[in-house]
Image 1: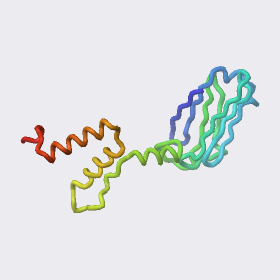
Image 2: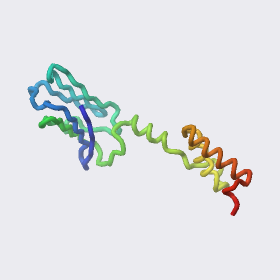
Image 3: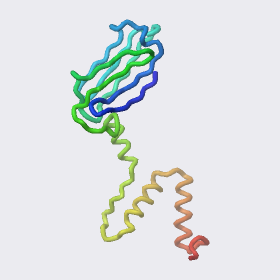
Image 4: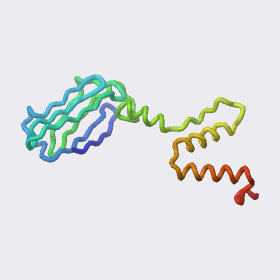
Length: 152
């Protein structure tokens, strides 16, 4: 089973690729929509059951206006947006994880213009791998000691 998503002004669309899904009787494919989630169930497709569910959607949806359609080897799920806004992520969890990865450029000390750069470098060092840490430490040491690359 493969899944992808896209969006339009009114819908968030999910494309679930599942070979031979169109051979299953219609009553064996169900999709239940809630305000912040949905769950797709496919029963007895070549003697297997499948479930695709997404909880904690980033924004609220309209369950009554949401639909699904079985096509050849594909299920198209149209989740109706409650508000006409562009979704940056599918779930709240994805957004929180993405926001954590973004380094903060804010500085507590507004009088020092280099503070945000120092914070960025600190974040790169703390979250970087061993090679990144060695590179940053080497550059810092050379700059402090007037290393070979610092003769202007």
